[in-house]
Image 1 (cartoon, rainbow over the protein chains, first blue to last red):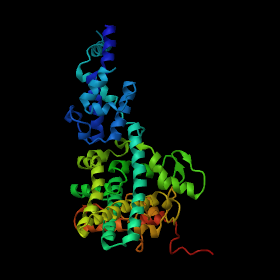
Image 2: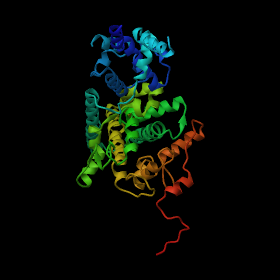
Image 3: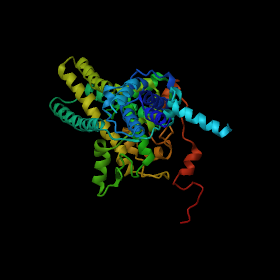
Image 4: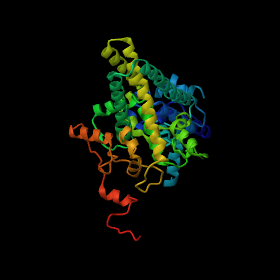
Length: 90
Length: 345
């Protein structure tokens, strides 16, 4: 029982959770409902500029407790793409 | 089973079974938009290249234009493209970037907003969100540590030295070294307007067109390649030289030189002769006292071309909710004695 609880806490920052975090973050910035955001659309298409995307990776890194080089966003510029990359590269 | 035990049992179950919704709620709770200052190698490199280009290239263009002017004289074409492109850039900066986007001093429909964002882009002072975040930060810290272009501070440090050190930093050097601010923190409103976000990304396109256009006009006006070159030099590079330095006179001189008529927490000043060439911006003490007013003209003799432009758009029905100066507010902040108070001397 204890080990499964611990596992649940670890899974807390898996791809799905990171996707949710990014979608909620963007939703709060542009004042939309997180559910309305297309996870495969580019950050640019939501209106985000380069400074705000770099700021987002900084805030995301704080939450994930790891350094995220903002350059990865140029290669993975969508909610799903960035979350998948970060979950895989842990 | 007691009720507490049941609650405990349920809590354990929840931890054991992190269904998607439960997990998502917890991720959402951790969202915080916190990073104000952005320090990114790519963005900083772009800043230095841009700052060097808008300082050096227009200066070279002025030298070339001066050489040709001495050789051939100056015709009406050069004066016309210079005056027209100078006005477009300055209207874009003071009416668009500054009064509309930074301070919401009036409201406008989509096409007027887009037009003003495009006109502002031609001034070569960066994309619209960059300008807005810089300027909101300037008002927040005005002439205090953290102000990005004060004559008195370089970042957090007081500038030692005389007039030249202070002038050089606030006129030129700040563009190379200042900190970037996160649009998501201090200018969320800019990100929500997708038509403006697109113009922000197309900045170099609009800036580039502001050089092509006067070259085309010069070529067609004179039907010669030399005319196209002169149009490019006068309407493009010399125009950018003049808008660059006149705009930065606002960041430098109007915080050092001129008259203070209102009590403000900064060193902003009014400067009548600069006000004419800066489309009203140099009534800078007026502006810092009441940043969200659309008109920088508070007295009948204070010429504010940007304000006249807004009034014209308003009369044409193109802008609305224009924030006008309020006499009572001006009187309350004024440093001058009231007329009815008799001096004791």
